[in-house]
Image (tube, rainbow, N blue to C red; front, top):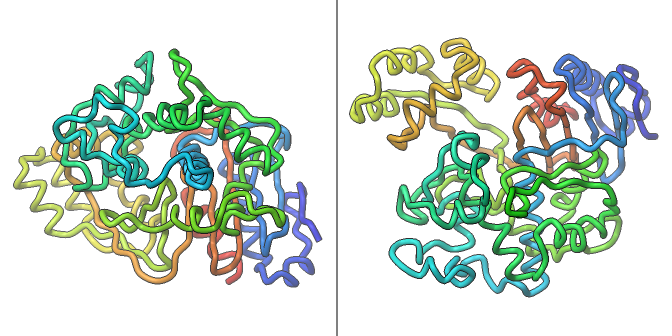
Length: 387
């Protein structure tokens, strides 16, 4: 039995039959309403289980997927491999852009771009360099290196936008057109949007707009190893490759986040001493000392961070640490894994192979009011639905 559009009503008999805890599901939906979500959709064992749209939000409304666009592009890269358009993810980028066949740039591979390990200089705030740029692809091509390719993992929007140019070169089609033909059409997705830069390049770092009911199909495809409704849209081996942790950071694969069943967030003397050694501002370090400790959940940790630094904590961390290539915490992972697409404002796809659950939460910019509506608990609440 499908549970649809009836917040906060949940039909308990259907829930029990599919081993989802009705109390936990109701809590998830209640939190979704409190955080001004547009929609929450849950699939269990391959079947649509709950589809809830909040307030006056309509099911046919397309919503910007933010950085979850990256995870959609990852599936497109798997399609390129399956179609023989890319022989290997280890191919050097200079094969597509010969001007990179010099210096350390000649060492950068497609895999480096996809795993955020290219070493390309980047500012985490996309409004500083990327959005003012007329051509996102040329901006990435012209960027200098801030570290040796493959040396470290660093989230990088600028480098990733180069994929739009590469997809067009190998497929002969603009990236969004290729994705529509090769990925969206087999999934029955007929209505989508994609933001272009002023040069006509589709954004890679964000920019895809989908209806929630179509957005969740990305997670279903990942869970089912490329199969959708009995059709093998992408060969399993290429989809499985997307969730292999990169060696520099085991919390990230190819444009999909990897979450371990048990993780702790640590701020210890090693982190603080590194800041001191690198001459980070003393008043900032004193605040970091206030969050020193081990936190059992992401929510506990970031609640503490916000409590100490306030709503501008991201800017504080970027301003004091990015140029020095320092981090303010260390995440220690253990146990089983789930997968996550994660976008600005709190747009999520959660894929849990253990419980065979796929869930999405979407929120549009007009409904967001900042940190209070980001719903950072969504992942943990989804992973706890059967408890």
